[in-house]
Amino acid sequence: MDIRAPAIKIPESLGKLTLLEEINLTTEDVTLPKSLGNLRSLKKLYIEAVRSIPESIGNCKNLEDVSIESDKLTVLPQSFCKLKKLQDIRLDTFALKSLPAAFGNLTSLENVNIFSGALTVLPESMGTLKKLKWLDLDLHNVKSLPESFKKTHLCKIFAN
Image 1 (cartoon, helix red, strand yellow):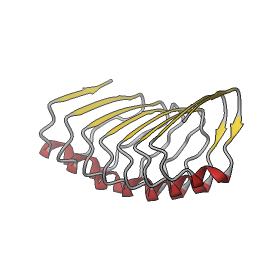
Image 2: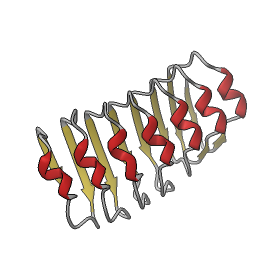
Image 3: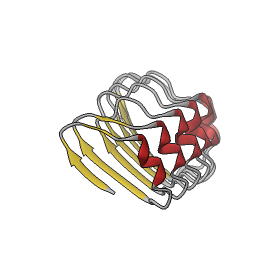
């Protein structure tokens, strides 16, 4: 599903599209419904200008690739860390203030790209991501990496 619109509220009926594998929302302001979690076949989620991610996202068990570009998103829900098949994440969210403490539970993560001007600390659990191959961080206010990063075997780390 590919939607391009100035502003849009996605209806709860989205959750009925249970075979949907990809969502691409290019908009200036989007509201995601709680029924997003009903999309058990969803593999790719690309969204712009989202204010919040519903807690139900943790039910999207087949989600492999997430890209969020939004200056409105300040936090990811804790349930985000239930996405065991997530391999790639790109967060271009200048307002993002925190990542869930259980971020290290995303055990299939291979590629992480995070840009945030508001984030001040990374969760200690990030250093336990054993499959991580690429970590690209552009974090203006993070002064140091967690101690757990000393134990990683990352191929490339880019931190600005």
